[in-house]
Amino acid sequence: MKRTKLYSILFLKCPQCRQGQFLEAHPYKFLKMNKVKDHCPKCKLNYHIEPSFYTGSMYVSYGVGIAVAVAAYVLTLLLGFEFGPTGLLLTIIFALLITMPYIGAVSKSIWAHFFLKYNPEIAKKASNDGSA
Image 1 (tube, rainbow, N blue to C red):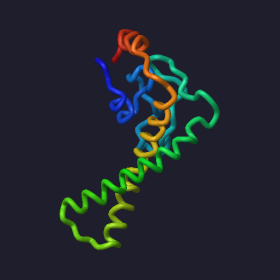
Image 2: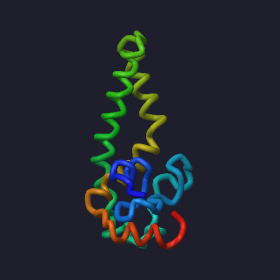
Image 3: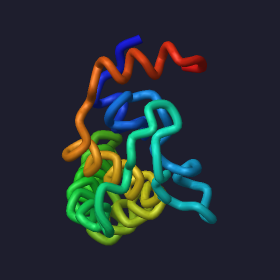
């Protein structure tokens, strides 16, 4: 099964094989919130290529947060709610608070996909090695 880059980013999969889990736990599991695994369980890719590698994902997180805020604003307008400026601000803040763990996780995934590239041969080998 060929998985796309978008699938791999949104579902927090390994950038190299697009099959193994990227995080230690679900983004909303607060004890291990957004902790990246050391290696891919499928292809054994080292996710930590240098110390503090994922610090750069803060910049991605800002952009993703802006996208969520704009989406909340547009959805509020499309659904016909007329909250006024304060209501819109509270709606956007609520949307950001609810999606904050996923924003952090997907930002790390996007950051990793910038630097760790997909390898079809390794992906094929990882899918043939047992569980998919």
